[in-house]
Length: 367
Image (cartoon, rainbow, N blue to C red; front, side):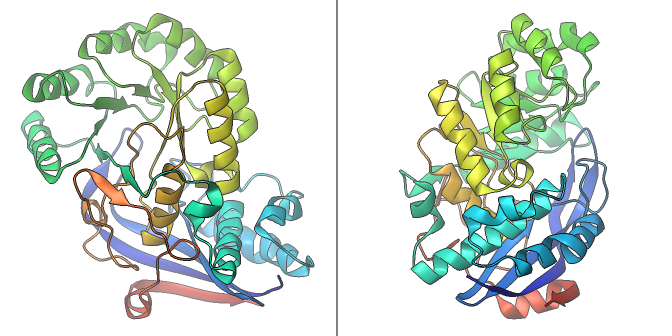
């Protein structure tokens, strides 16, 4: 397959409500979309980088620049590019996992559409719909938190994840557990907000029967997570730490986690994500699919990934209406706490051209 052109688009999607974590707050999603035009058709991908390098090392203008100056020219110069070869072709460029993942995903989308095969079929999905949870940002008060959780449960979400940070941890978790009872599937996500010195405070979360505590320490502190995991009865889950299959293998060997959150963009794409899934399955470690405020393009691919056998916990995929009043694809909807896995060719979802053009703030075509 020959890549003839690559289109980069920046689109601006207002969020339904502001979303705050321990690291940052945002009231809109500024998304970077990639479209590859090939000799066999086109493919789309969502590169879920943030505008600035505050949550991840990669950021939007940097990803655009590295694609335009290095990654895209390398792909265009390579003969017979397939999705399976993208990472090898781009290997001389160090880092930039999300940019590489977006290009690989767009090539895979084009490849599978030409073959009339879905992402789910290609990745090895075993179910046609997946249970999904919802991530609740840090609100202004406990009353607001309780109201939000109640609303999400009424909508049918199967799992609630609370964002926490020092000073907003024990009390909100206790309040939600007391209000909604012991049967609520509940977990907490710290987004790297704590240090090893906070172990005593994190141990206080053990009494609430959480499914897991996600990424309490710094992303590069695997040893700290391994030590913390020995102190807690709550399972420790790694998210920001998991940046490749190799790092995932190291984390499992060290005992740094007993659950893994796989974010395809962060680990280098859906092929690497599948490899991490298989690795964790071999070690008896459950996985789930995290969200990065993807547009419908990324949401569709995440649903296909989350349909693999070892994705045994509800992911942070959520219905479109959780985040956007308008998306660049048809909305994904919740049905009894589940979302259907797209079955059409490629990601199985189609771009809405009129909406895309209206929400686009920047467009460039690389030839």
